Amino acid sequence: MSAPLAIALTLVFYELVLLALGWWGRQRTRNAADFFLGGRRLGPLVAAISASASSSSAWTLLSVSGAAYCWGLSAAWLFPAC
Image (tube, rainbow, N blue to C red; front, top):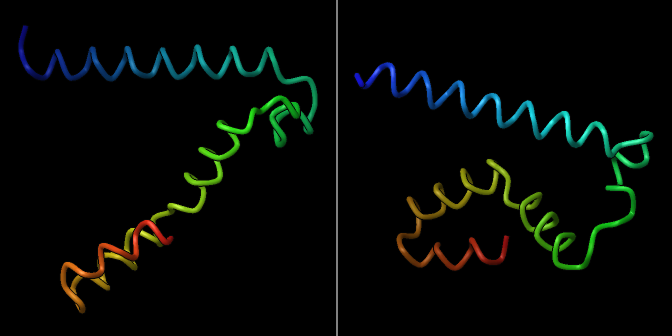
């Protein structure tokens, strides 16, 4: 199998998985509150991971990179604080 064909098949498979996950999520969502609040069924671990992922945005990555440019390796201590 050639490399371009393998890449194309991988992307098609990935897209099909995303569509299946979207369809599955749509079946479980009954109204807007279910969509925005997760149906109020999130446990503490999932809520903590979601909050952490939300705070680690592209802006955080850019600001820590800029601080590392200015301050060197000691700027790595900023990332856990963000």
